[in-house]
Image 1: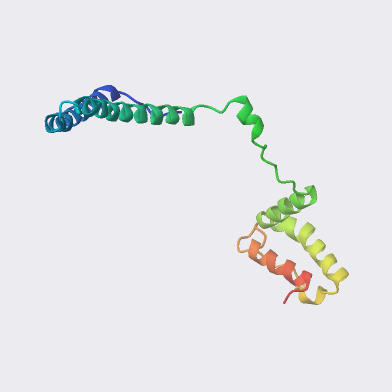
Image 2 (image 1 turned 180 degrees about the vertical axis):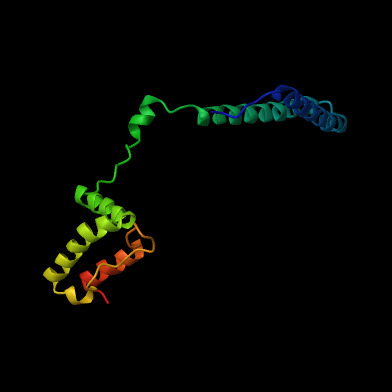
Length: 159
C-alpha cells in the first residue's frame, strides 16, 4: 500500500514556482547578454529545462506508483511458487517426542530412554550411556535438550 500523500500539491507548486523564478532569472540574464538572433534559443533552452524537470518528476511519480501496485496475473505466473520444505514424518514425530520428553520425566523414562538404550545396544555403544536415565532439574520435567543431545552423541559413537 502506498504511503499516504496528503497536502502534496502546495509544496510541489511552491517548488515549481521557485524553479520557474530561478530559470527566469538565469534566462533573463542570458537573454540580455545574447544577440537578438540568439534570444529565441535562450527562451527555448529555459522552457526545455523546465519541461525536463517536470517530465522527470512525472516519471518518478508513476514509477513509484507502479512499484506499489499489486503484481498482475502475468507477473504472478512468472514468479515461481515457493517450495515448501518436505521433512519426513518420522523426523517430525521424533522431534515432537524429544520435545515432549523434555517436558515430561515419565515420557522420557518410559519411551525415549528405552529407545536410546536399544539403539546403543544395536550400535555397540551401550557402555557409553549411564545405567539410569538422567533426571531433569524439576520434579516432573525430563532432562534438558542439551542432556538429550549428549546422550544421542554417545549412542552415535561420537566422543
